[in-house]
Amino acid sequence: MKPVYIMVGGFLGAGKTSTIARLARHYMGQGKKVGIVTNDQTTDLVDTQSLRSQGFDVGEVAGSCFCCNFDALTSTVEHLGEGQLPDIILAEPVGSCTDLVATVIRPLTEVYGVPLDIAPYGVILKPSHGLRILRGEATSGFSPKANYIFRKQIEEADFVVINRIDELSAADVNELQSLIEAEYPGRPVLRCSAKTGDGFSALVETLELRGQFGQRMMEVDYDIYAEGEAELGWLNSQVLVESSATFELDAFLMALIRRLHSRLVDANAEAAHLKVIGLCDASYAVANLVSNTTGPELSLASGTRTTTANVVVNARVAIDPAILEAMVREELATVCSTFEATQKVVSLQSFRPGRPVPTHRIL
Ligand SMILES: Nc1nc2c(ncn2[C@@H]2O[C@H](COP(=O)(O)OP(=O)(O)O)[C@@H](O)[C@H]2O)c(=O)[nH]1
Ligand SMILES: [Mg+2]
Image (cartoon, rainbow, N blue to C red; front, side):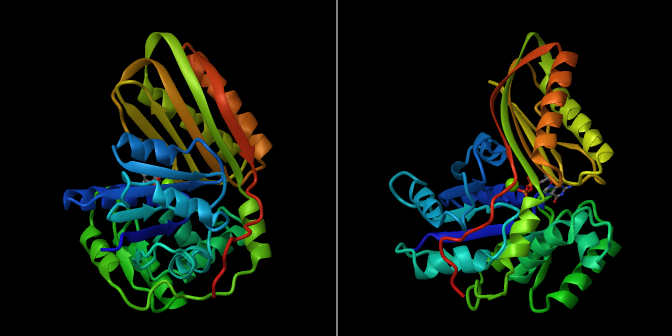
């Protein structure tokens, strides 16, 4: 049996990691061995920490995206499992990447020497930005170049998943489906909630289909793609927070993400995805912001009081990364002082993603 390769695409904050975690639990429940590959432009990934904390076998490609470092993807895949590849490989590409069929899926079939059973390529649609972008609203939150990436992701999908149906009105779900079907005909549209598991059996069934998948060739203007990606300021940081008295980990993360959210709103800088994980000995907590309009949420409560926490911040925002870095440093300092804690910045990188130069591009 060849290992099954399932790549879950979609924009920043769409629900890829949540979907992958749910799929991993599903396949492990069937007695299958599962490995996950996460991906980011640099180190200190919230997704890796969060998936490892859930007990999954996770390898990470940190430093460039799958498409631009194809060999890092395959070598990371080969290190999953213990001497034997897992039955199921779940891969999460960077949410600002597109052209993944030509640069990842086809090279896996045609260049990579290890035979894989490649599942249909599903792209998760993020409703908070998707509705505005597909309606063609001028106030989508991002520029037309970033919207171009969002649309190209849908264009190359074998199927599209409307996520977060637990909190969408029926009218919005229907409108999203009509917009996708009108603009991108021929892609089946699923309705799911990675949070509640609604619609997951249809997702699992779709991933089992085999046939003419992973073959949607498309034109991509790499200048627009590069400029769209470079509009996002990227920041990854790891900070050690310590206090002589215990503090509430969940409240700390929420205070930080709320303060950052209000700074972004004031600066008119749209958040594509801002995520923080706080890890302490006993537990961990995660807080997320996926758009300025939806606001921050505590995605996973720890219910823990602690004196030390390792806090990892990942931010992707339509803003100059130097301004983003200053905001994160200032708000970390403010929140630490509110919680009577000290902080030590272990690592911090802020930048604009560089121009994508794929290792392979097979049309
Ligand atoms: N309400 C709701 N929240 C979701 C759902 N899927 C993901 N989220 C939340 O959306 C945020 C981003 O999800 P994540 O899986 O990290 O997105 P990714 O960037 O595509 O990997 C997190 O706060 C998740 O808890 C969903 O179906 N419903
Ligand atoms: Mg993710």
